[in-house]
Length: 384
Figure 1 (cartoon, one colour):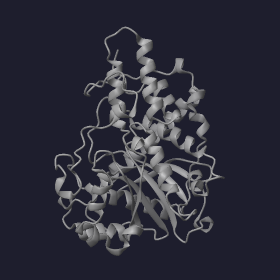
Figure 2 (cartoon, rainbow, N blue to C red; figure 1 turned 120 degrees about the vertical axis):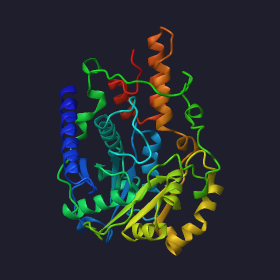
Figure 3 (tube, rainbow, N blue to C red; figure 1 turned 90 degrees about the vertical axis):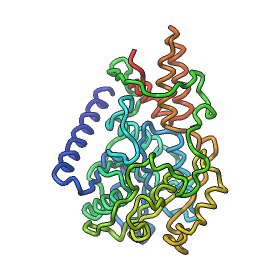
Figure 4 (tube, helix red, strand yellow; figure 1 turned 135 degrees about the vertical axis):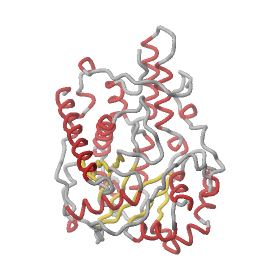
């Protein structure tokens, strides 16, 4: 299967090159392209149980995909009382990130997309017969977007579905990236420079992967450190795009991102711009994040004047909320990367021991298929 994975890697590289070339022709135009879709993805609105096609979007850097990502999507889909609330799911990767500067130790875009395909394949394998709310998980796709801001992402996705009649042009068999079928001996190792703080090599449980750098007092916009974000979450609204009123997008966000979304310092007119965002069939699913004060802080934030003024009485419709298990909410992609890097830098000569500890970290905090991919491709490792 290694040849198939390499062929898939080449396909993704060509696709990303094509996207970049298109972006170069018109840098201001937000782009969205599908890179993967399950066999059930190609359907039209007449097959939807809703008058409006509802898509749950998990938007992340996926560096790497974690159990928190997987549970966040499952919990979001399963949280609605209407068993047919969502029609489809989308894993979304923004090539550019407004808040993060890429590091040399990060996985590249192609590796991230391959890990996302492993995650999507594992999600599709879930038995939905006993859980009707999980039916939308069988209609799952992966997409890339060129712009980091939420309004740009929404515009690009709406335009894509409007132009493509709600149907994808590409369906990919997940079996070709089945990590269990790849021969580790023929995979080329990747080397990465290390730029991270020390993590104890025994870091194999949730308490050691917990992020300690989050300010728990950050419960409203006034507490946000402006140095964290250099760019607004949503830019100025323009109407020159193909908006599709038959599509309703639900962006799944952590509470920390929702706080930033409603921070006035990133807008020339936050009320006008966010009002336009929500009126164009864009919605939010907010999940709890460890280190942000818990439920009491969330309630205080959602009862704040700015939420009421922008969302009004429609809060329950435009902002849905989900509660993750506390142990799951603690899982951090950043800390997983740091743990792997620092375990790999241990000075002892017991390579087998280091490898076993790294495997424990990955299987504890990443979906199995993703963990296997990282192990086989030796991602996030120090140069030895």
